[in-house]
Image 1 (spheres, rainbow, N blue to C red):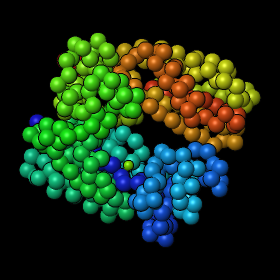
Image 2: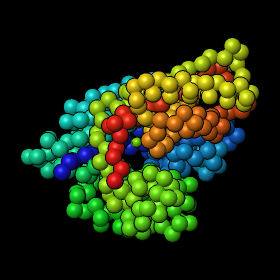
Image 3: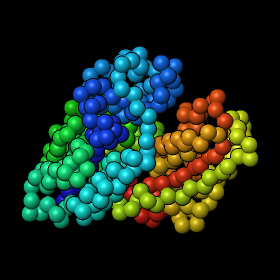
Length: 351
Ligand SMILES: [Mg+2]
């Protein structure tokens, strides 16, 4: 049996800001785009728990946040500063891991199977938390499970500043009361589909007829049934996050014309998949990087089911562009990236 942990910082960007602006600790604080008196575009990247008391959430439009709490402290993003702190945090986490996989700027999976043979996993997690706090001043939450899926979900439940362990024997109990959209990897669209098919709870999905669901959703359906049963064989992948293939394009003159942008995304996506094919790799995450004429840069990512299909890459990149780009601003440079790669042969086997 494996012991996998997800270590995830709490309200990371705001926590970083609190280090250099201690005065915002006791007041609602938001990191994101400039709210511009409620007319600003963009979203809340992170907010602290004081802000959450007023209904603010990360991902919500910054204009909505402003309507709910106009007198919160609004700070703009400073990625370079956050990256510096993230690096120190990741060094600490890595030192506690048999295997280490950074997922994003503020979270990482670790496999600690060998490390916890002679120590209670919760005590071990507490030592990780203390080391991160001592070295960087940042608080985190840690989920512990027999696999990545359960570790991720336990971490979500333990927030903020918590530790939650779900061992192999507790997985069924842990998942049984949940609604379908509580299950990691199920977005609003998939949840709606599943509910129409008669699966509103994780327990119902766990007992679903595999052939029927595969008929409706393809191999993703089979994967979902595994998830609903708490089964996830995927390994904690050393340097998986570092591995990616990307292509960029700089426009001769800045543009916001959709046809031009669609054409470029198609070209970049085709090139990326061609390179993946050479090394026989599939991808699971699609990222679009948009740099505007004023050199501000935005990065948007989305997970898809494991595939090597060029249309999935191109269509997802285009969706990300349409959902996130500011149509009024002209773009200088576009990037398309495929990451979370796995070899065709090394692909997770689906029972
Ligand atoms: Mg986090």
